[in-house]
Amino acid sequence: MRLNQSLMPTAEAVYKLIQELNKLPGIGPKSAQRLAYHLLRTPEEQTKLLADAILLVKQKTKLCSVCFNITDSDPCLICCSDQRDHSKICIVEQPQDIVALEHTKTYNGRYHVLHGAISPTEGVGADDIRIKELMKRLQGGSISEVILATNPNLEGEQTAMYLNKLISPLGIRVTRLARGLPFGTELEYADDVTLTRAIEGRQEF
Amino acid sequence: MSKPRNYQTEAIIIKKIKLGEADRILTLYTPHLGKIQAVAKGVRRPRSKLAGHLELLTHSLVSLARGRNIDTIIGSQTINSFLPLKSDLQLSSYALYATELVNQFTAENIENYPLFELLLETMHRLCQGDDNELVLRYFELHLLDKVGYRPQLQQCVSCRLPLKATTNSFCPSAGGMLCPICSQSQPLTYPLSVNAQKVLQLLQNSDYNTVSRLKINPELSHQLEMVMRNYLRYLLEREIKSTAWLDTLREQTRRAAFSQIALL
Image 1: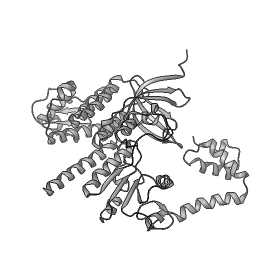
Image 2 (image 1 turned 30 degrees about the horizontal axis):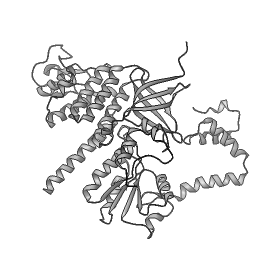
Image 3 (image 1 turned 120 degrees about the vertical axis):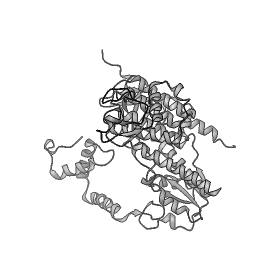
Image 4 (image 1 turned 180 degrees about the horizontal axis):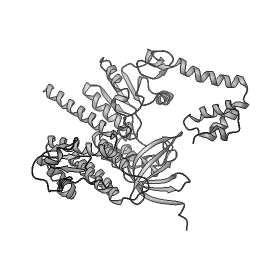
């Protein structure tokens, strides 16, 4: 829905703010209005913090030249660290995926962010995501394992299968995150694909 | 009497777009409601009970609740998950190409049962490991038939005379074949060998069982693909996005085969 100022009995500054908030993903005109009036009521120091944070995120962050994660120092902390296993690369679709994986504290290698997944019907091909950069990283011969951690949906699977085709001829071990039943759910609601994979990937207890 | 609040339908999921935090808008192709859009709530969360039943290229029984603007999916049960399609890069790409064509050639809420049947059969055929290119050409020609763009392959569309057994040309803007004389006045035509014409006619007029016995060499197969692609592109007035990906895959397979030969 487009906002029309003539229908809005409010100050122009407020209208402008509503319009900008409305552009954010998941924020409709009503939510935008609610947020705008909330900001109007909060103390100025508080709103200044928000405004500065927004500006800072644009000015201070860049993509790591090695793994393409979002970072404020290049190369990023993970790529620089000596504590990390430099022979493993975990491939993810989005920077947010690294946050989720790091939260588990079980992986100690490095990452590579593709910034997307192959989606033929959306016109996203292999050249539109950072596959070339990945292949360049793998050329040194110091990498022994690549972990494909793309999303377990059709686009992620396609990306993983394509990468496997490219990487396995190089003699590097290619692994895929296990696909099975999520914790805290019930078996009866599981779909065929998940169950099939869960049975295939069962392990010794 | 007003329509019931909830309803149930079979559907093939042909497109999905993200919505908000964890939702998706899905495009479903159904047997009796044609193409519909519906919201699937929470399907991007790992614990979603619906997500696996609403993935692309899945044939499901879907329950929906009517909404003011868009209906909401309240339940879904997989009928066929087409696992062989999803675990093969080439096959899933072919199937996505088929769903893209269905999406592009249809308008919402128009029933087309034969088209639903064709799409479902095509997905089954891709799973069976038949000649995939042939499956797609059969799909394309019969899709055009079912949406009202059946090309004229038996006679010249200009002079209406039956075609002779010689190299005639296919003309996308005329919607069919032109004899050598008529094609001189048309700028954009694609010459087709006698064999290519025969195969196209057979694909258009026979059932799939007859067609599946055909053996086609790669060169002819490529010729048929290009003429169909040009016609489809002309009708849609835009690129078919997934063809670029099909070309990438083919190029990669060719290169891989080449490097294997070099190794030997």
